[in-house]
Amino acid sequence: MTKVTLGSLIEVGLSPRGMFNVALGVNVGAGIWVSTIGGMVMYRNMPKPSFGLIQAKLWPQYFKMTAGLSALMLAIHLRLGSRLHPSCNGRLDSSYVLRCLLATMTLSSLTNLLYVGPKATDTMLARHALEAAENKSSDHPDVSPQMKLLNKKFSSLHALSSGLNLFAFLLPSIFIALWTGEYGLF
Image 1 (tube, rainbow, N blue to C red):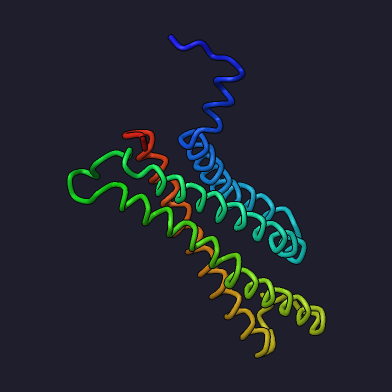
Image 2 (cartoon, rainbow, N blue to C red):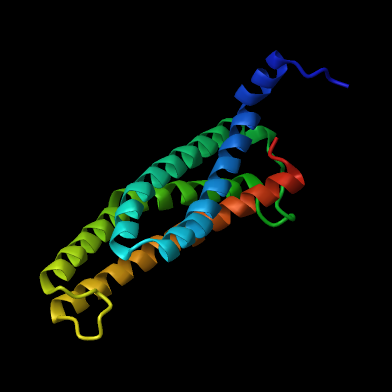
């Protein structure tokens, strides 16, 4: 049995496998928390404008973190490719599948960070300004045509951002965690 010391813990923590697993755990945990629990609690308990302003500050940080950690995992995977599990049920090379998932995770977070998120935030802020000018909530039954356009645009951007986060980041993260648990990476 290997003796556990502070030195051995540091060595394991700084190893490629250790860094990969910590990055994966943080990505999955943060994704589940931010996308479900934290967001739902805030949405149900905060005024809509305050909720939107907090989300506009939180999501960019989340996307920076997930893009960086996903890119780190992809780099580790590329570096150690020859030592990875050799097959994915005999159909596709697992290193190819996992690398595609890691690249998808990185790109989806970057897309949300650099394009979709800023557009959604700008649209949300325009909606807030119009709500104040019209003295009506954006979901009031009798909103102006301009508010209807902003609502439609925001809804589309929010759906795109949520879809990228759920289908291109969170689900691949969970799949990789399940794969790693079953087969290991190295």
